[in-house]
Image (tube, rainbow, N blue to C red; front, side, top):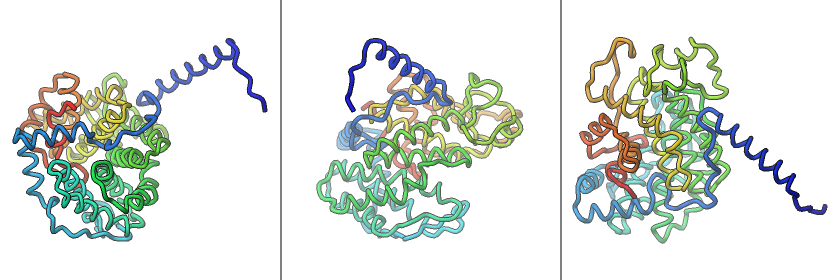
Length: 398
């Protein structure tokens, strides 16, 4: 079939259609997509970039604080132990609240250990740390075939968020990982299918799952999965953190089945008064809320590294969620209209990435978040998927 050039009228029609499509995307919940996935992914590029790693290395070597203290904390943890033996399982079975727990803790902690050793390698350039990270990653890629039981999607999201961080650092800064392709196959076949289609459970589930999907997509250079995960992430962020501009009720994820006010209030843990910064799980507890906030910041940070900055789309919700939760975590009296006048605190070490991006890079005042962040330094690990973020992101403008 012959190919004919487009005349001015045809080009004008195409331009009009493109403009209409862009407008429709912008009107989607969460703001649609700012742009397509990057033409070429940047590596290492999951949560931490090479420039950020270089900044950290320089600060630690200079003995500067808070990075040296954060590094010492990391190196004193069980995750940095060179005597650690990986404990892979073919099938990891995780029920609600990890009961039963057949390999759940082992998988998560081996992933954090791999990431810990990858960071230690980059700072010290001592090959033993790279080799330990590889040992852990190789053990799992040679063994695991599936995740089962009710918590399988969440477990896959938690572990699948951390593995790519470690793998990106080792693959692109260390020479000598013969089984890297087997590891990539594990991520593609065992992890990605479990997380890529999301979840209708509490919002922290889907946010963690999208964090894993985005990180895995970067490692696999998979633009299609990256785009799909980011679109779902943007919809979920808009439905997880309330802003007064949303109207009288929080937004919902398309297809959620939440159609009435009573259904939405029930999903928001019975909270019927909606104020800016409240999250879908604030009235459940701050621990799970922290998981959601953390994944919001992690995906946004990875997107920035990849040249497709999502902070303009999620930054205000992230800022308000951090500030709202931080003020109560710091001890402000809980009003009677909020969660029946009682909060279950325990936000966790989850504020550094968002605070650094919004306050340090963009200059936005975040009084409560700043106070909480600085009081908690050095931020450690939640033993699930958050680890060493004072070290990697504390006051890091790279």
